[in-house]
Length: 358
Length: 227
Ligand SMILES: Nc1ncnc2c1ncn2[C@@H]1O[C@H](COP(=O)(O)OP(=O)(O)OP(=O)(O)O)[C@@H](O)[C@H]1O
Ligand SMILES: [Mg+2]
Image 1 (cartoon, rainbow over the protein chains, first blue to last red):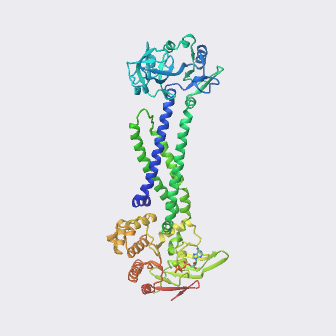
Image 2: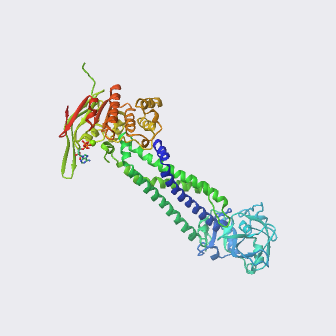
Image 3: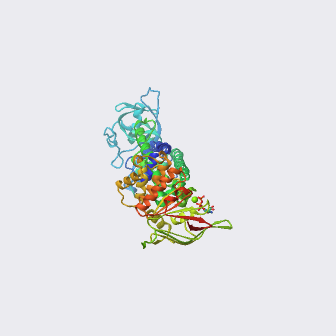
């Protein structure tokens, strides 16, 4: 540390510049990570939130709600088999503020009868189980579209209206806000559901294996990954992040390698006056580590500030755990990048200090 | 008066050759050297005669092809590299031709660093006293690039002496100085050597400083000869 701190202080510009580059990369990684998390959450939040741990789907539905059909009788059987379950009908359609408004909003209906096994609480304390009459709880994403508590919301197809009783945070499915209906409300706006009630899935908190044939019990995480577009969106972003890590390794490695080459004579002297090779190795790792830590600290701070001011239309989620993981990966990256320089340093011969020869 | 003191440095029958492709260049041919405490020895000789090679061997930076090296009673000939690094730290002080100061350390930190390495409890006052003794007290916070050549070489002397080594090795310490400055610097080494009873070996081209040393050797055909 003695040498590392003094060298960094003495060569502020040189090491400041490399820290700046690493800062930019860390910042970009955190920014993309935040957007990835935001997108992912925006996509599957309604599935991710709540108590349910798994969803039962028809076999062959490829983990997609809209490809699965479960009759009321089958739902009952599944429920009995697992011990608990909430049958849900999912449908994607549009709503508007009133019959006469021209602006439509894409939404997803989640029709279900709430119970202790499947309950959600709105920001104003309203619970799904208290849903009566024509009152509904909806995703807070609709708030950004101008919808308000106490105002009505109109189903475009049927022209029927509901009253918004509360907003629930982070309730989205395939990027659209979710509107929770009771099964009765659902039947009121959907004639074929009134005639022949079928569901798409049964949500459950049960850990038992399903024995009813013709159906699969799918863990929550698998469901999220199979939401249309999810893998494509997060996949490309994840690849960008991976490349940024690789770029950091290369930038740090090349920079410190060039510096090491320039300082061979100095390392020879240090060895000649009695510095152990291990000490010089640690010296290098301290320098890279300090520079990287500085870059991580500044970019984390900026990202946290940025997270506060990002608009809701650009979902951005970053938390302590993500920051911690990113920081840890960058520390590993920094240490990896020091390897080729370490090899070079270990090969410096202290005799090079004598007689001015290199 | 008969001195019973063992030499601080004893080289016995040292041979060193470099393998240059199929050719074997014999630089040192079975030569010996002994320097006792309080003795300041100088080695002169033509370029390429093997002066730096001999000094590197004495400082355990280089292994001889054959022969025996003893530093203050310790046989270091077959010592592993790690132990030699440690020994070098405690028993040997180097003064190099171009000072070879660490560019990002202040004058005071140059000394502090080697005392830290040696894990020797050296007080700040001790460091300041030595620097003061070498006329550097007004330069404590300066970096090497802010010093004159003579000042740099004096810092190098201080760095060589601060850990209280038994042996001082200097390779052309005056090469980058004018003759007046060079004489001053060597006088300082001589003074330190005699005051605190160190053994010192200096390689030099500069015959004008030879009046300051106790013993002069000339190296010719791989052999040291007393003059
Ligand atoms: N690593 C090496 N490989 C091959 N030959 C070497 C090597 N190091 C030194 N030599 C040769 O050994 C001889 C002695 O070198 P040395 O550096 O000891 O000379 P010197 O007396 O210090 O000369 P100078 O006064 O020019 O510094 C030279 O001929 C040199 O070319
Ligand atoms: Mg030489």
